[in-house]
Each structure stands twice: as structure tokens, then as C-alpha cells.
Image (cartoon, rainbow, N blue to C red):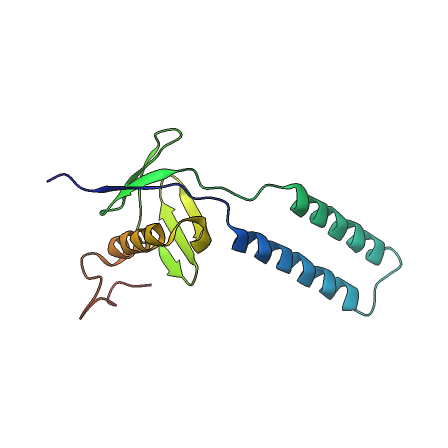
Length: 145
């Protein structure tokens, strides 16, 4: 029986965009509450912060190209046909899946980038690749990070 291949077409994540803005605001707040600067440091830091804010506003968020992957973690990027294999280094965090393959490197996939069914399916595939056949039950934590 042929292996089932799942297709994923991630969209840019709104959560990732909000986190980038929160990091910028936090950095700006830290710059402004630091008590002592030389006369040239504060204007330079504010200029740097203005540039980073401008870049944040005009830069498009990172996007993962549509791809397919089967239950064993063998996949193919649809835009250029690049074949990859998910490695055991994949990690699942709350609302973030870190996918790793030797050919593509690290790919960050946020939960709001795909629909709920696709998110759960991709998480199951990543966990199966990471842990082998023991996804649930006794011994399922033996190979986890």
C-alpha cells in the first residue's frame, strides 16, 4: 500500500509578527530606561531603533514554501521539487514546530500558519520521526529531546 502524502501550504504567521514587534518595543524600552549614555550613544541608539522599526514595518514576514511530507518524514518542496527528509532534531514547542532537515536546515512553523488539522498532522509526523514508532504509551519518552 503506498504511503499517504500530506500537503501543507503555510501562510505568514501573525503571532510571529506580533512577537517581533514586542521584541522591538522591549529593546526600545530598555534603551530609554538605561540611565547613563555619552552624548553620542543615545542618538546613535535611537537612530538604530528607528531603522529597525522601519525595517520591521516594511519587511515581509518569513514564509515557508508549500511542501508535502509522508508519515515517515520524507518530503518535497513544491516550488522547486527539492527533496528532504525530516531529522530526529525536530522539536515541538507550544504554538511552534521547529522542523529540521539536512537539505533545508531549520524551518520555524507557527501554529497559526496552517489550519488545525494540518497542524496536528504535521506535529504527529514530526513526533513520529523524532521518537520512532513509540509515539504514545510506555517508552514514548525514551528518544525525546
